Image (cartoon, rainbow, N blue to C red; front, side):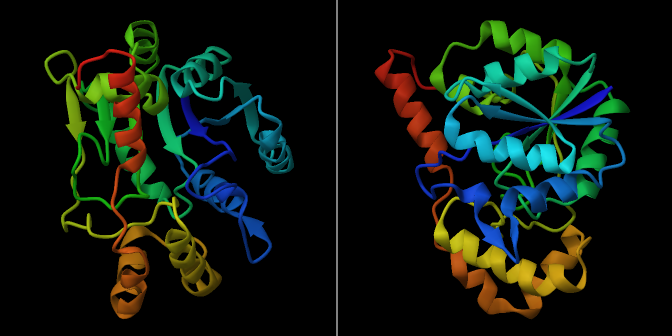
Length: 258
């Protein structure tokens, strides 16, 4: 079984309740789940959320869409992934982030196909940084066996919060493959962390999505190029602030920098 695990929580510090924000009467989470459900390779999806009451709405959305939900520790995302995966007989895990509502399902399937037809331990579109795909097109694929291994070995706050650093920071231990796009699209940003990101995503959904809800990444880029003002909306945002905060937690707890 190929299991997609979508990590999701409402309690975001930079843009509170970001995945529950609505565009055209649907939440960001609903848009992303709709796109993930178009994957032809994923056999099952579990949304890994928290026991925080703020995430009750996430559970309701999952129930409405017929998607299974697992509730676990708020600040230990790796624990959530491990526990959610243990409820299945999955052999392959696909890590997905709920702040990527424009994610192309074809990219999910390409990553899975690459993983299954080679002897990689880990396949990703973005990690190790920096690749040629935009932020907001994040897909990571690895085995259940690898997930169990990093769950028992990962101790740093950054490893527990971001799930996979102990894989992609250790190329001597794991066979890692970062996918590359023919065209370098890393200047684009389609993830949701700030109000500017929301405004861009809102423009995409109100315009491109309204006419073509199953648009692919190349069609999204084509639309962006035809509407150059869209790029300016969030192009000034500095990336990886969440990662930098996690590294600070590592230092505070006495871990050396990765």
